[in-house]
Length: 267
Image (cartoon, rainbow, N blue to C red):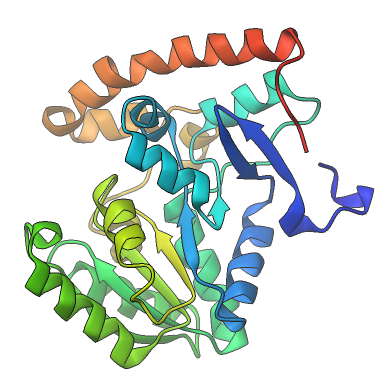
């Protein structure tokens, strides 16, 4: 787990709640993803948070997708805290989709790796691309696309989306339409897509575009970003945060008990 222990950064993992998390810092994660892109290594990049981990308990397809993902990073301080309660060192830091997108863009701009932005509301991916190009000179974003509502149920639209990506063949596909839709669509089309890593990044385009404001750093550090988002979008998020995600407490309790009885695995 320690970077000085001789283990290659990309190989450092921690098993938590049935998933193999990559125990990397944000900078290491960005480097690993861009390195995979340069080698045209295809696979999903997922950032499970509390809501996702609760979802995985009842959605077998989603659980399988996360277990097969090329990279798994923890999004959410409760996940980080749980990792530190169940292993000697735990995960080094949270790696959110919102943070990962600009971090990958920074490394990709220097490495000459191209990206394609797919997702968000109309105009959001364009604005995100404009802002990120301004922040990281030399960044190659080959195109953007906003899939229409219900695209995942439209075979013809799926064919158009795959053809658009394959015509440009980006090193990295950034896909942000929310979980579990983004992960399930990307996994189903993985064999047809001519890309490297596929970043499943949720609302990251909105943050990069400035259409949604992130919580202050101090709020994030104390694991209260969910409360910030709830206060800004109570009608949309109250059921998720106050009802569904409360089940994480039971999952965490079971994981801690498992660790104390020697049943957790740490690699």
